[in-house]
Image: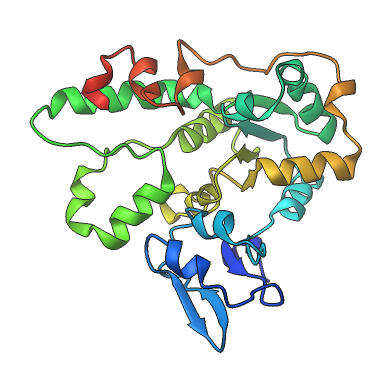
Length: 264
């Protein structure tokens, strides 16, 4: 049976591609192939960074939409939790931020939490690793596009990757411990590469579906959910310390209460 992961993460809408070569020029890993005036994505080279999607003037580059898979999870057995990346605060107007949890519950999620809950232990574990290896460089592993880039194009630097899971993965593990192994986890964030990360073999069974904020917006529209009409409410879990600042510059160090230059 085909699954949502059988389709490529990033692809070309061939009818829209107009032979402008923009994606070919901007791709940082040369994962675009031109043939007969059409630009196609070489899946085994792509790191799902999204650069070509943003750059294409014809909107000919797209990514796999997993909304139907998320809807199917809510129709299945067991509770479904949603993990929302802290960058939602930069997406929504201040008046809507405290209405987001109610909107997500309206969609049917049994547990609504911030990924920042997982960012706190990730920051502490990363800081501990850095302290124990002070004489070497370190590459944090929160960004799957960076991880895929190093693994595919800089294998000599794989040893510099901090052996700590990302906040998304850490939070999914915490959610499953709390809700039971029959629970399902849907992640929502800004990054297309999170779809690739959720598919990694070593993380199998942790994140069932990774959506972008764009897909969530589509979902709200289809379900008739208007955040402006939702009541204010809190997430089911509150992140510790300054974990909500994890995604900004210096945020990991701030979350771990360290000097920025130690992890910068």
